[in-house]
Length: 116
Image (cartoon, rainbow, N blue to C red):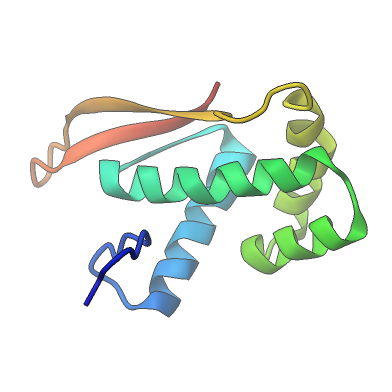
């Protein structure tokens, strides 16, 4: 039973889902925006919000937790050097999901995840 479970499954097993969301979070940090499906965008948004909250307080423990999620030294460094200080005074809501039109190939709904 899925009672009170908040993790969206996204039709994947847990290990693959973690890798997909971490990859999308890394791409958002490095490139500033990603285009994906609305369900993946919302799931990635939850992960990125947590990472930015850690990056606001630059400690060794927070850097290690962020690196454990992202698995990318460049993305972790950019998160703590640029993005964390940028949102220092903001309490949350660092990203937004904008709906786009359907994808040309298969007609799937698309969304863009960007920084506020």
